[in-house]
Image 1: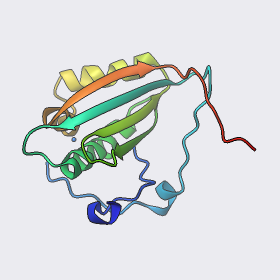
Image 2 (image 1 turned 180 degrees about the vertical axis):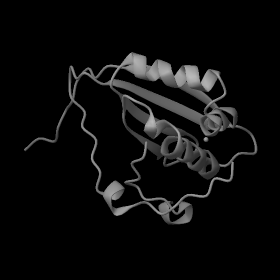
Image 3 (image 1 turned 60 degrees about the vertical axis):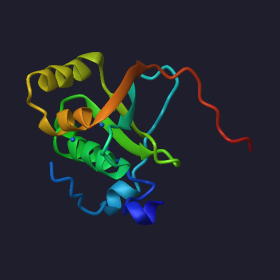
Length: 142
């Protein structure tokens, strides 16, 4: 699937147009994201189903474009990753922020029309998103 999409499974960019993507950088390929119980991050998990006539690749590329060109420069943004389900029916975005105020700044900018790429990602899909707190983490048994 990833060779068809021209995406790396480690594509870690974070949380919408022309939708051409530059190749992933070596530093992004090696990037890691930390998840901790009772951490101070605000986590958003967005599940987005492409609308009729929109491919899963178009949606993933649009969301990646929004993360790279608009969202990543916001104060309080930590990281985001864009995932395509193996059955290629949904795109999931996992994003971490310093605070709810950081997220609210994005919501306000989106509402004001200041984030056209993210707005397009939301327009070409049916998004469902919620803020989360990490409840537990289970690691592989040694």
